[in-house]
Length: 480
Image 1 (cartoon, rainbow, N blue to C red):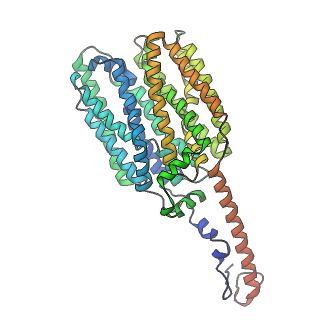
Image 2 (cartoon, rainbow, N blue to C red):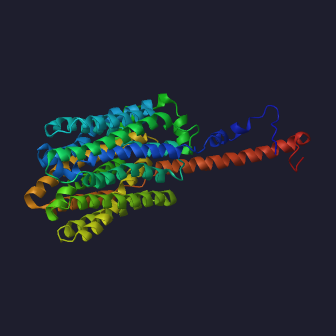
Image 3 (tube, rainbow, N blue to C red):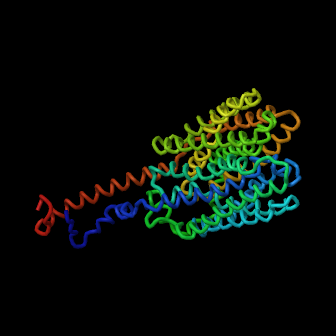
């Protein structure tokens, strides 16, 4: 039906409050999956470089002739670097956008990988530290991105799934980091032979990181042509002058529910960081000579966690039960940690594989839940800022728990160290129960959908009036 407006009448879009036009520009881009896959890929490469030393820490201890604590610091350097640089990078994300952050992350990741190739002699440990620090800088540009990419590129019905897939890349990188180094680098005594095998791993990593940097230059875009959801359309329509980065942070720090989530997220993910960093030492202590299986156990933790994360993301998109899902997953993480603690020393590797897989399903599966719950609690604040604060909490607790558990393990054994993590997860579970489900983004989408439908009804009602008032010019309506 062609609707003709009588002279002097307001426009149809005006009669609908402009909602019709806003709804018309909401559209999903086909490029969104390519952007998500590319981000996940360079996140994978960066996460691999984080754990590639820790998964065979005993081998690198002998090659560089340093202490186990020094090798642990190669992992903890990622955590330490993140803390002071979060706010500058989050500010850059808001001011310069996704593409700039993606270019910086992939470039630093490739640079760090190439620097490590200069550390293939036992006396060149400082060079490998430098390479790891550069990769740690890249991580600052990566960890806060999943929820931002999901919100900017994906619709409200798929945003949680997209966030889970974005987190996948990082988790899969850790999984590959547990699996590949023990296979490529055998535990041999000859230093030259060892250097040769290490060089293979470093060359492969540098090549992949460089290829991904080139793809980011070619493929990665700032945002889709049209916003993918009503909530994102509202954010993009807000004048830039209205946004203050400092005020945004202050609002987040005054949000009691978000503060609770920030602490509980840090406790859970900090435990995961400590467990990942010290896993090789734990397994080798009870099962000497099982470096390859130690890596496989780490792989099992991550792969099962990826399944858990995907299921959680799909579940959230279907049910929007953020608080309930987060609490259940937290409780099961605690149960998994307790079971793992008391089965590690039984002498049966297959039991360790099973319990580690159960633990990983929930502990690793919690990561995207925290991101998405934070976005819901803090909308319309920047996803990069809320995710960044969660990650700062995780890095701080990760350093504290890694050092603390390492010291407890050295003095009292692995069971005592893991019981420390169990007590931390219990505290986090209790605190999670006090978070209120103030789902602001979900509410914004619902309100805008209702407004859009009301606007459509107004247009139809107004169109009927237009036809009745001018039936001669209306050629497609039964009223004419």
